[in-house]
Amino acid sequence: MVAHLMAALLGGATWTLAEYLMHRFDGHEMKGRTHFSRQHLKHHADILWFAPTVEKVRAAAVVGPVLGGLGWWAVGAPGLTFAAGFLAVYAAYEVLHRRIHTHAPRTAYGRWACRHHLYHHFKSPRANHGVTVPVWDWVFRTLEPVGQLKVPAKQVMPWLLDADGEVRAAFRADYVVAARRAPRRPAEDVRAAA
Picture 1 (cartoon, rainbow, N blue to C red):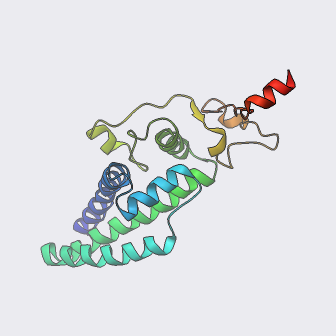
Picture 2 (tube, rainbow, N blue to C red):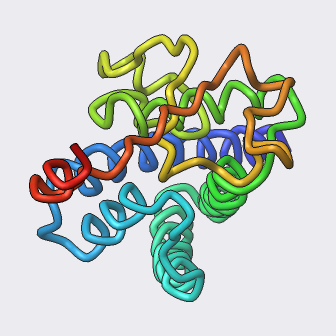
């Protein structure tokens, strides 16, 4: 029983490392040269766009059996539990990541995760790659502290604003929306107006 618990915890922890490495190196460093990187950069351009769920399920359907098979071969039944822990934390990551972008945080952890991850989107894409935990950012020295976060007007999350278009009172200490710039007028329009 203890072996299975430890294997599940190790599998979950391994997912957090995989999450960090994929996000940092494939998502960003490949600069659009891989399918995952192109999808990731598209998500950065539009924070409400996510890769199709069917692609994520297909990836899990391949990775799960491979991890489980290798685990069974290496250590027996706890190897299967390792794979289950890995996939369970991957599924939790997918839910959490989407909710960060689409739903207001309701817990202290949710509030931290939103600020930590959205800092990566809006301030420094070279920092805070771990969406679910900051451990690997700390280990690899990519963790940056987050103060009040300036959100570009064109990327505002739906949950951040109230009915009047202002940052909800509960989030004003954490977020400010950057002012929209007025469109530039062509020179002849400016002269005609003078």
